[in-house]
Image (tube, rainbow, N blue to C red; front, side, top):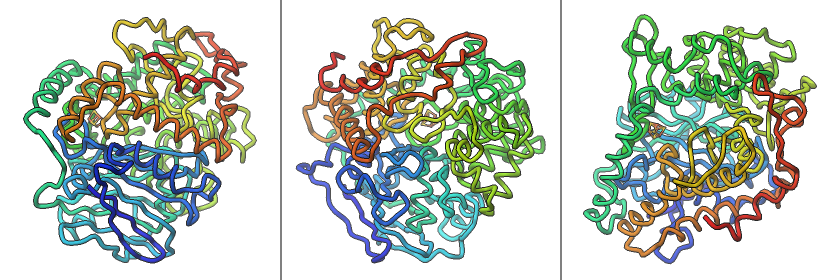
Length: 576
Ligand code: SF4
């Protein structure tokens, strides 16, 4: 496997082999992006300047048949949090990179002109791409298919990335060919824009250079695991993440009206069940995989009444932040907001949080979906002053409007779980080196990191520091393997991972070795942030979560400063 460095000011491309003795051998995806940022990026640098690096990496299981193992991590110093950041995404390309024998791409320095990086069997080259300037992801991908064929893999940015807006995403094309998958959080699309990379295009290789020591042994472990996973996740496969809408509203923990409420009267109009009915009735698609090897297939494809594609995939977090949070009670409006976010290349979570603050400050009327779409399509797309106000995240607009309630941690907007009610999720928001990011340790109701261990009620603080900690470590492991965390960040799954990695790479790793991979990645991320000025006393949630009780649960965020400040002391001596 190799790492390819692309220097945008020199226009040079140089590969480095990863050998068995390399420190990067057992690092992939988030583990590798964070290690490279730690090793090579100055913590104090301007995230949009030449000293930052953008790393795109697949996991160490990429190229194997392990279920849901074909995700890509995008990493850099974040312009949104000013700390280390990784966001991962499905799509076609991680598997294609692995088959080319590529573990990671590192983009260095910056360029004023736009380029495409083209990867095929014969060579990797930079191609001038100013003709694609300003294009949204949908038009861009159509043009790239016309030029390079329909089977290519793509990572790209929309106009928001080109304008270096801090909510900008890196898009990836899905298996149906839509630019629907996004490494969305942390503004990494802005870093890609600063490098002058409009798209990375991967032509499918003829064979595969992915390493596999003992495929028979690998399959003996991975196949029954995949079969069981598909069986146990059947309901989730049918309804996907939107199935949480109604449950979260019933629990009183769904952010509503900029976190002033935790339940929504119109939840039945935008529930997962209602979305399912609408998709089936109109002939949309359910149970879609967003990347090769996925056996859970939780994604959907939404069409309008005439059967035309609106968006794919509409997820819980998008529906919540742009639905309940903005008092928008119409599924077509939510599908369209998702479409325009995907097209302009804006994080749906950050955008919904941003509009929530704007609505509370009277800049947009509650429930005005048309205005929310117009800002994306007219203002952000054209980089107007209004576009800049809304394209740079929750914290930015909150400061500009002098808002009283700004739902962000370390510069990043909270996702779709009220931290007063979903206590362990609140701990993840407060402590993750990634800012308020549910994917760092998604402590949703019913998810336990270890079978048989009592973690208490979801709304009670008892044991929640442990839940968040264990989930953050196991998720870091899954992220390093390039596995979707819906497979289950659990103690039990660490043993499975040790066995398949041993079969793939001819090693003798134990479960503890695997857990240590996650611990070491987190240590690097925390250390980088410390040098960047994001120290452990910054582990907290906004004050209003501690002073205003959630409604109707009447709960406050009640962890102490010491609970949060000393949270990561566990990394050295925790008994899992
Ligand atoms: S479970 Fe869902 S999010 Fe995860 S890889 Fe499969 S389709 Fe993508």
